[in-house]
Length: 228
Image (cartoon, rainbow, N blue to C red; front, side, top):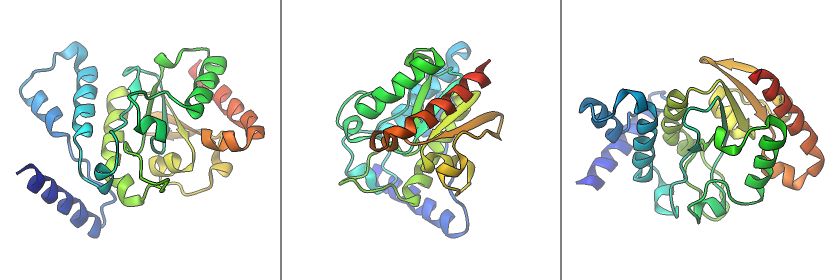
């Protein structure tokens, strides 16, 4: 029965895509049921909904990545953070561990956050536009992104960040609809839906091009100025 329901939902997604929808904001079932049954107390409602949203994403099978992933890598950090960092997809280490902040890229990002923003990583929220890692170093596809985007949009709605730092071109493109190169937009300020977007180079790019670190440090200093 569950497989049939998933197949029907996936069919609905493809039908909507064929008639022009880029994605559909399907409300996670467990979140919806919990609100209807008033099982979530008002003071902690958003935190609880994030937990239910994560549980719903963990059992998601709407795209092919559900067949190859080791686990769903959901967002984490402070659910009431003023700053949200959004990357493209989980790394190999994240896919194969229970840790969100693991590996050289994460270590570099944490160092930038703590040395420039002067706050611990526990004070920010970090997530991806796609929650599952593609197999064999493949890139994420537009279909996979649009299928997963409702989770990200719901995270943004619940966390209510003042600033979103998009890491790399894909995260920036799919949050803004702007297809310009990240080198052309990094360090700029984009106002959208009540929050501010600041795009930066992907941390993986910095590992290959250490000289570009100075640009990211400049951009994070811009974030610091926006905080105050």
